[in-house]
Length: 359
Ligand SMILES: Cc1cc2nc3c(=O)[nH]c(=O)nc-3n(C[C@H](O)[C@H](O)[C@H](O)COP(=O)(O)O)c2cc1C
Ligand SMILES: CCCCC(=O)C(=O)O
Image (cartoon, rainbow, N blue to C red; front, side, top):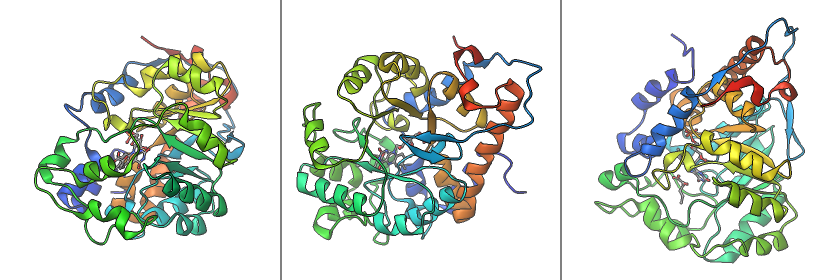
């Protein structure tokens, strides 16, 4: 039977994938406390629906940093889609574009960012990791500008990689046919070096990503690009207020899908304090554990302008290629539309905290 909800794709994807690649996708860090908590947080929030509202038409379209999108659900930046499907990020972005959804492409995409842009009909942002070698980051940003990417998403929760014990046990490394295609050979060789008892992705991150990045470094980023900046991985009101005061255009409340600091608050629980702290000065998105249209509605009610979805997109891609990605996004869109109708909130501007009873 065709999957009826996003979760149905999980088992289908698992059957198609090599076990250690699957574990890289699925895993979190440490005890995976935060990974589980991201999901559990949605179960603690309940709706307060209004009735006798005309819901004959529900409008989900909005703008994200000036980019029109047809739904407030986009694709989170994830490395190495080619582990799921040979067309990788090209297939993902094409499918997202077909439903009018935003795709955030990872620094570590397994297809060149230019090739992803060429195949996509929808809006693209580029996620950036800041390298120790600044010229590598700068060159990446220049290419993103030339290829028409509309914003940069700087990931700030990854000075090093979290310890993902599944990857450590598997001695995870990239197979030869899956490459970090945005970079030349010398920069990515370590990703393919198999070491028992170590994750090659973690070793590589330690060698390449700049762990000394600070708030002061943002001025450098600003000086080399005019694209709007989004910080991904902000989890406190303190950091959110600082970002807003620096004029950062967007924040993504995220704990990296439970893959970085284990024991961090679920992203949904951190959302309200971030929204409060920025007080409308930047656009706030969230990711982590979104698996249902009702999850999207809860995040919007708690102040997110939009959500990003991570692993379910890879499940769709592994199980059924671009059609699978398109189906995952349309399931979320249709579930959100139904939830808005049943909640008596036919447009996004009618969704606010009065819609939820949060603990
Ligand atoms: C396989 C995988 C690879 C990821 N790669 C990146 C990445 O390259 N850059 C980044 O900022 N976040 C990365 N993330 C984190 C996602 O952007 C996102 O924060 C997280 O997956 C959201 O949680 P969810 O998977 O529960 O939806 C990755 C996540 C996964 C599962
Ligand atoms: C160096 C980062 C690798 C991709 C990533 O962010 C992840 O696996 O979560």
